[in-house]
Length: 329
Ligand SMILES: C[S@@+](CC[C@H](N)C(=O)[O-])C[C@H]1O[C@@H](n2cnc3c(N)ncnc32)[C@H](O)[C@@H]1O
Image (cartoon, rainbow, N blue to C red; front, side):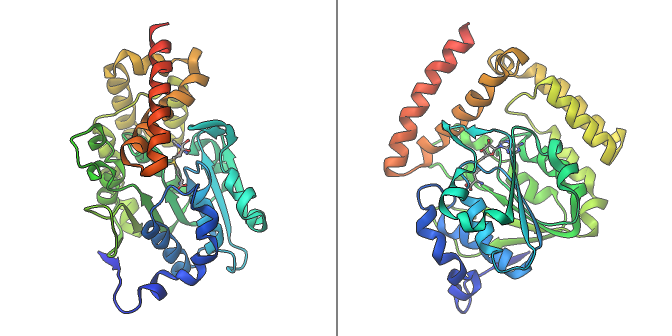
């Protein structure tokens, strides 16, 4: 295990000189703490990747950090994927809007794909990816499936950064977010060199980390499939199960894919009826908004600060009422 530490000059290590020009531009759209953005920036500055992938865009705060970090790396390009077209917290705003709005000069280094799962876009994006940020659901099966969908397109030594690796321990109260442990599970299950920030604040464990993949990552792929068996927090609709099965069959074969198939059969029928309603084909549009909205609003209402917390508290309550209405119709 390696740490990006504050030994000697933390400013140089994190390359704040590179990060500084965008900090004020994204202060209201970024969903990362200062040290998390610095960690992401510093890894890109050190590894100098050429083909980068981001799963989970929201307003585009982390996209801006990544684009800014590659601005002087010749031919480097960022591909970003989000499940939604419009923000889960404000459906009048397009996913990734902050990139065009705040750093228009970097848009030519960026390609955004929305309204689908990573497996819908990976053939088009192609292989040879050498750097990835994964920041999507944080609850099972979430990023476990996302990582497996993109792994075949990564270089052998690609660096994969996971955000919100400590979301499950951030609350001081006993709360539901103990379930947000997916990225911490992945940090253990994926074999490779682990990289963590030594300098961090506001959490008892670092809330971001990375794995530099190597040959053993693929040799130990069962270790990752095995955590799909951990309890699921949300159901996946049949159409998406089908897409994921096709992707896994093609990349990993039937034996490993069957772990996903069995888990999907078990947990999809085990999850409560409300979740099933949210995943029915008839209300597909609604679930896209409500499923993310409820989870995310609650996260921000719990863990946000100041004005942000108040705003999300209000949204959480309003969305919950709408959700109850859908549930009973
Ligand atoms: C926590 S936000 C991302 C925040 C962003 N990385 C940042 O730091 O500014 C999570 C986003 O992931 C998206 N998402 C959820 N599941 C996804 C999936 N399987 N693939 C891609 N995006 C997904 C949601 O729509 C949401 O916009």
